[in-house]
Length: 83
Image (cartoon, rainbow, N blue to C red; front, top):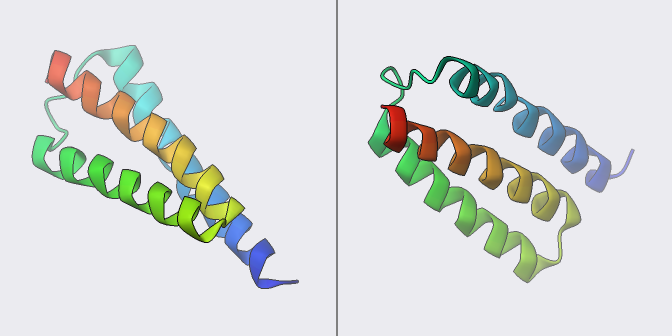
């Protein structure tokens, strides 16, 4: 197993960890328990990781951070709307 496959495994697991939270918020429309400063900082941080992955040309980082950014931005948007 190469280092790149370890990266893909890590990217898949950490990215999928956001799906249950996003689904729960979309269904319940209740974002009171979500921290706005945390998700704002996290979303900006993921954007930075995506940029870093693009600079490195690292496809595990690019793929994972693109999907995670979409999920985090969804959660952040729901927090701003319903929170």
